Length: 163
Image (tube, rainbow, N blue to C red; front, side, top):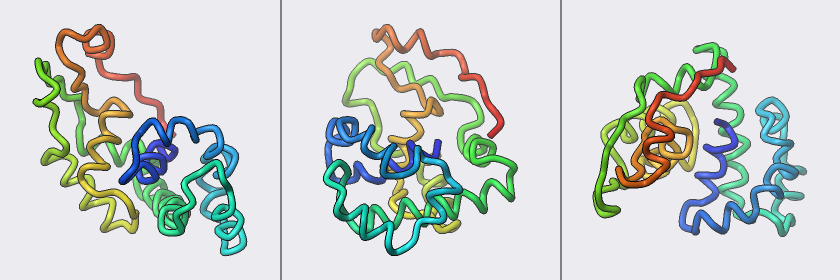
């Protein structure tokens, strides 16, 4: 989940394909997205990451990943896991049964609430549109078109793992 929130933030203003092509570089650059390790990154690491050609070299996005790790640590302490915190914004995966790509929203009331709460807790690059893309990516929302084979495959709620 932490990986996805970082990658969604890195994607802001870029194509998702760009981020997917850089994903393995992000794993290496961000310590396999181990929250505790990323939270300890300091100024020297930021400088090194700004020179890393395999990732998006945007200071604000790099610093937000580190800040977000620290904020997620606080959420984990409060809720027991980042996952438990997130699911309060979509306790049952919504099944949209959409028939046209034009029906897929860019944001929803749930993503608005999630965005506002994440920002309140210190996360950055978590606007409502980014949050909705995150919710799609992690299975909180199933907005595959009803005719898509994946719609049926993922219609049942994902198994929850306590992390």
